[in-house]
Amino acid sequence: MPIQKKIVNEEKREKPEGLTTEPGYCFYCGQVAIATTPDGWPEAKLNEHATLKCSCPEAKNFQDIGKQKERAKDNIIKLFGSEAKNPVTEITLDLMKNSIDEIADGNIGKISMDINDEIKAVLSKTAKGKIKVTRKENYTATLIG
Image 1 (tube, rainbow, N blue to C red):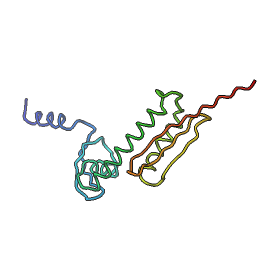
Image 2: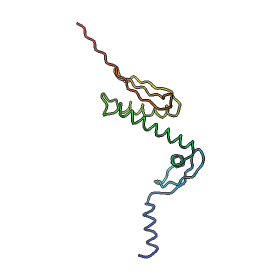
Image 3: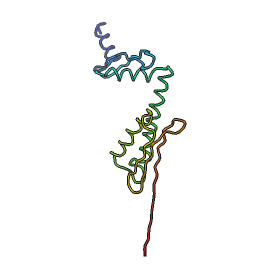
Image 4: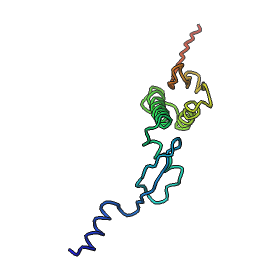
């Protein structure tokens, strides 16, 4: 195999078609991280990628908040999703998951949702800064006669 053809084959193996290598910068300290991404990633996404790879204290806090959001969204699915007793609609699930971002970022302290006559959802932040997902169910039985 000619040398030129070998070099081209190795470049394709190391960098498949449709991928580019671009720099991103940590939001907090500016450290550079190189990302191999699909063509056309916006600068904001490259910088977020770099921040998720950085080890500065502010970036670590950003990473922790991101993990906390994912855990809370997983907890919403566990408590209210299709596997739960009396699951809620997808629209309601999406509303709760979108609310988690606002709670984690400190824009909202607590959200309480009366889903129907029996189910109530409460999304809040604990004193230690953890996101708490609560499902409350009320059952009322009345007999007359």
